[in-house]
Structure formats: C-alpha cells, structure tokens
Length: 443
Image (cartoon, rainbow, N blue to C red):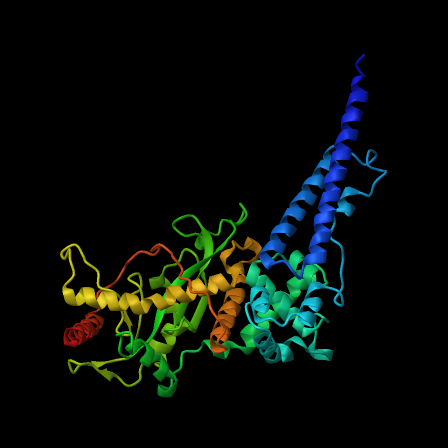
C-alpha cells in the first residue's frame, strides 16, 4: 500500500535533509583542512578551495530555503552555520603564523610578489602614512601597518576577494577593503617619484644608453596603451564612453617605459571609448613636452650621417607621429611595399618597442587583480589601484626582484590614424638612414 502524498513528500524532504547534512559535513571538513594546512597550500590552491566551499555553502543555503528543511534538520546545526566561515583574530591568523615562521624568499614571493626584505623596506616607507595616530588618524583602521600592507599585496597579487583576504588576516571583509584603499593611497602619495621621466641629462643618460645599444640613438622611452576591463554598467547607466568598439567596458592606461620595462610616466583612467590620438594630447606627458618643454628638449645626438637627432620616444602605428614621437613606417594606397631602409628601421623600432608589451605583461602577471574584470561600482577607484600596481612594479625592478618574462599579447585594437607631419617624417627618415648605414658598416 502506497503512503499518502503528504507522507511521501515528508519522506523525500527527510531524505534530502540527510543528504544535505552529509554534504554540509564534507564542506566543514574541507574548511577545517584549509585552516589546518593554510601554511602548506599555494595561494592558488587556497583560493580554489575557498571558492568551492563558498559556492557549495551558497547552494546548500538556497536548497535549505527552497525545501523548508528547518524542521527536518532541527536535530542538527543549521546548515548555514555549519558551513559558515570560522572567525579568527590577529594573533592566530594565517598572516601572523606566516610572518612568524616563514623566511624562505620563494614563499614570500609566492604570496606577496617580493621577499621579506623588500616587504619590510616597503613597509618602512609607507609606515608614516599607515601608522598615523591621534588626531591625524581620522578614519584610518586601528590595525598594524604590516597587516594593512600584507592584505593589499595579497589581494593585488592573487585577485582574492576581500572576504578571503580578511579571513587570512584575522578580520572581516570590510576591514580588508578599507586597508586595501589605504595602502593604494599611501603608495600613490609616497612612491610617486618612482615613475618620473628624468629631465636632467644625468638622469636620462642610462635610459638613452640602453636604447642606443638597441640601435635607437637618443631614444628616451617607449609609449604604449593597455586596457583594464570592468563589468557592464546597470541598464539605467549606459556609460557608452567606457565601451570600446568590441563592446567591452573598461579604462585605458597610457604608459611610458624604459628598456627594462620600468614605468617612466603613468596616465590611467581614460574612458574605454578613447583612442591614443585622443588621449595623448590631453595627457600630462604631452603638456610637459609641448607646452612647458620640460622633457625631450635636451642635447641632440649626432648620427653617423651628420644629422643632429633630437630626443624622442617611440610608439606603435596607432600613435600620432610627432617630431618627438616616432612611429613605424606604413605602406599606403600608393606604396604597397617599404624600402629596405624603412623595413630595417621598422625591425629595429619593433625590437626596442617590445619593452612596453613586456612591461604590461609583467605588470599583469605579477598583480593578477588587474587581469580580472572589475565591478562597475569600482570604476572610479580603478585608476588608483592600477597606478599603485605600477609603482610596485617599479619598486620590484629597483630592488632586483625576479620578474616574470611575459609579454602582453594584444591584437591591434586601436585604429591607425596618422596625420602628415613633414618635420616628424624628416626626423624619422634621418634615423632610418642612420640605422641602415650602421647595418651596412657591420662585417
């Protein structure tokens, strides 16, 4: 004899409750495994397990609400409580145990992208900004400066959520969020000098010499552009100025680097619909070159053909051609090929120009947060985060930290639109002639 429908439904609910209870127990075991072994797991492993636990917890909670299992599982702990995150505190958290016991450079780099020595040197540079007390403190978090720096670096390095970061540092997600903002501000306020193109001959000499060894005499840097993506805005806020031709939303960065990939100028926050010819004339770099004439107006170099070569930077074909910004030659509708001299110039130009793609590749490889699509509500904060990451990038190079050998492989997403500039073309022609003559003289 079959049980009545109400009885069958009750049995099914009880069976489902038993299954969910077992699953919840497994999740608790996994969570305890994370707590017990957090010093042994790589950050990527920890984050993967945390994401699985969080997703499973959410699914269990939804099922619990959907099937109204409160009575069926009354004999057990509430599922949401059972798989919830256990709270920790500063004295027992992962970061306290890590800094107390780990001295290996590799483990520090795995977690914070720098050795303990570099971490503490950076901490001392930022401490006055992160350790303010009394009336100066205002809204700042009353937690140690090393915890603030550690949380910010960990989030930047791995793209970890504020909840995940907070758990590792013994505090809540809101504290982790505030600490991240404080550290980014401190980096931008106190380390801005790490990304300045020198204006003095002495400061420029190492940069010029390095590019000269690559075949580009009197070159002072490579300019380039990269994009950082954000989520689509709400339907009631179309924000078309942030959308590129492919329909992606984001902000653009203009960067100038030396041959080692160190950023000499950073300009970030341009809305995604812009293009380099729109951005450059409104940037601080352009103003310092064209209007105040602070930069790129130093002593010219004499080329092998006797022409005096002014200081300049180089950029891709989507950049405007100026007398101080030299781009590659392009075949046009009337010229379907380049001369050997122009082809050789383009080859040397491309070799030197690779510094910018390496710089962007290293930046995003080191600081994985920059590769992730950011929340739309954070779009106004994104420039501060990117700028801080660039300063950290320069700091790592200055301290001799090993950098990933990666290039940013990005299709040419900007339209080529170069206006004719006879002076700039004559300068580029003279440089091409010099490169060609040097090549002919080699045995």
